[in-house]
Length: 170
Image (cartoon, rainbow, N blue to C red; front, side, top):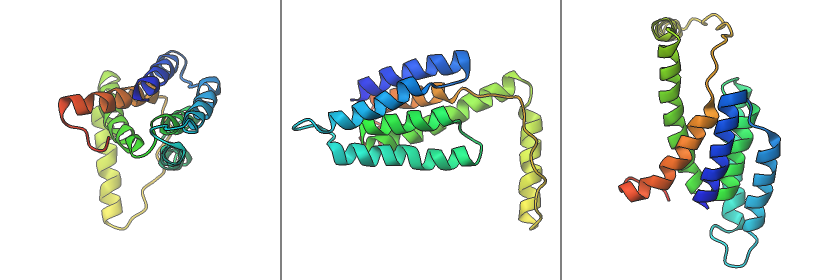
């Protein structure tokens, strides 16, 4: 199922990089397909693991959506990937996607000349928090990171990790 997940994530990444959106037209059918595949006799992963994968893909990413870190399309893509790969493979996808997102985010900050200012701001916030002070709200910025690309990288990494001998869960 990781190959199917990689195909979905690749399409989503291309659309996200070009348009800044991951459309429901690909995430909702992928969720339905992932769960339906779990109903097949002898399915591996089965329906239970796929349902749990959907929940694990959705839960943490929805919390990040509420915090303003992820977009809604990213959340639905991770839920769909969870339904396709099941649990525990979605844990690896989430881990590798987060690492890829951090690298891509650093690259975007460097490219836009904002790395130093961002690190300075983070240090100031951490310093205030360590003194028990409430940091001021962070103003919204126009900087956008296409996390669909990071999620796609996370799926590819999950697929390749066992070949490289570094797989964590699957």
